[in-house]
Image (tube, one colour):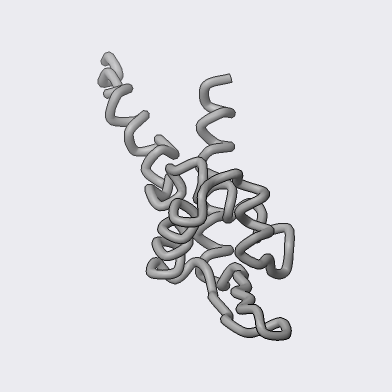
Length: 112
């Protein structure tokens, strides 16, 4: 008796790590922000701006998106008379970003 032919496309879809990619991290700017914050306890706005090389408005909109998704924590304060906004990764952000990186790694392994 012949074995049934496996549906390779279905099998691939079920194991395809692309399903685990997080759309929030699709942007190179958000990917840069999260990568920077994962290896630094906290960074201020100007430090992040220098790292990801974007305008104030562009950075602010990406940070707002990450904050609204619960991935980044914002602390506003002052250094002397100047405002100082500091960003750090939340536990949820750390978990989501690691899952995203794991999915990317699995995709690379599958293709190689």
